[in-house]
Image (cartoon, rainbow, N blue to C red; front, side, top):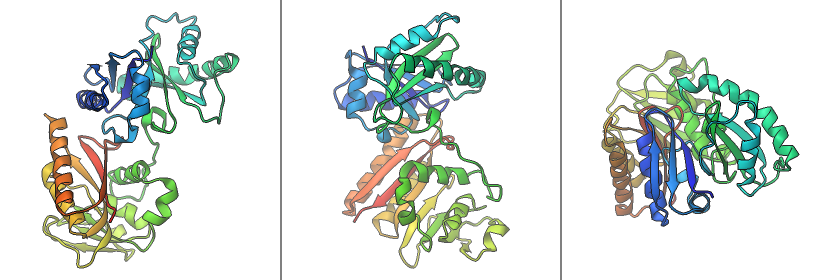
Length: 354
């Protein structure tokens, strides 16, 4: 019975993740209820249909989910596992998924409390892989789903699968990026992760090409500008604050101390990026104007969410963006995701297609 959808998320955003999966499932006629625990970093959505989780995997696009880092389709929680024989019940649950697997990931929640549990997960992976091979359930490199075992404690776990073409490719749904030592701020990782999230690697040379023109609104001290410069773009950095001196020495950056809400480029640019700390609706309207008026072809920007009613505010911002672009007669693509390196915010990718 595949009636459980398990979703990993950022700690503190369990409610938003639950609201989202409930809304998206309702759109395809799937109903159920969500179980959440504050700061747990995961959500369990129980569908009324016995095969509801598998149906969601077939009909919903994982990339359209904003707050989920990863999702699995599986069955009930395996609780009170015998520490001397965890493997047997887990192999039985894997067999009940009625498929073989291309690989296996043994995971835990992304919380401080679960850090020691991840050490156990790493140790348990090898015997699990061996057991799956003996049971003829593992077929590496084949176009098959990925098996996930998500431990809540060392004696309780969920066993489920994710389709490799409709899930996050990363362990725990988290890309492993290193902070560049010469970058001016850690915010630089947000833009790098956004590129990995929204732009296929095969398209980087075309869509992030050297010589492109970009504008960074609210640039100081230059974390996002640094990423653009490393792609050999020419950047206009808009901020009343100071930019990193080392970044300015290369000659690719023009720093203008002007208001980011009033600046307009003299000519159309390829990219506009924005990580300003401002009300999300103001940022949504600002970037919509840039794309609707053809100031820029592509945009990556962050929406800083309020402490309460985050889901409602995000839906409001999405409506503002979509209404503005429809009014302008623009063909566009909008994607939104809460990235690992985000905090109380989400990252948006907007591209004008016409």
